[in-house]
Image (cartoon, rainbow, N blue to C red; front, side):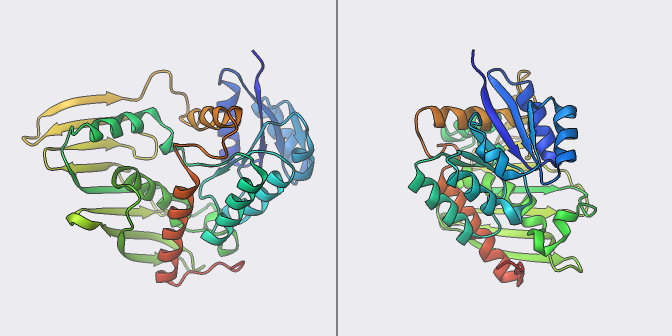
Length: 326
């Protein structure tokens, strides 16, 4: 079987996880890594078993054997680097958050459609079998009509330079807040929500943590807490009128449990044994879309990528957070 060759742009921490994932994934190859630093790219290639390394992004997009490029640079540069790839005729899978605002996001998505090239957001929870199975149970009425969702997500990330600097589009919202926003949207759909929020900022001006109160028509609501100052339980509960669901680790579910109205456990589902890092599913979906000539994945369509970014713009506007490049 011929391996699907993936190039990685940016040689940071998440790029290493992706390279290791691809190395262990059947019919895929962590084919090339590109960094602005040739020595860094070479060291990365040796550590993670990547076939080729490049000291510039331009060399990566010029490689005729690269079939998909994964963009793992800071949020501030996603749009610029996605355009570089698309203009060179390369499909792209862009690490979340897709960009730093909706305007640049829309530019990239429009370019992908004009070039008839695949462009997707690597919002991994949208592709995970655990979440897709849970969504099926909800659609079949396992807990009745969903009326409330509560979730928290956070990690101790204050030492991560890319998250504390405005010029790198730092802050908890774009790095972490997009996860609960996507989870809530996966369940409630694309109906425009009303959002109230509070935000605490670092001295650098970026958001350190926030609480979101989201409401929808018909009395439905959701609450999300996000922080990059420490790690809370990172769990979620989805409440219906006939029961509720508990999720352990919303960022990469370990287990979800369904309870009835009497708080009796009805079903418990654990992460599949065959799952490795959880990132493999977005690459399988991207490859399949590219093979059949699609410009987007049904799991994470362009409209959803843009909608979530528009919500983030609205929140930052409320908090009076503006990045220098804006």
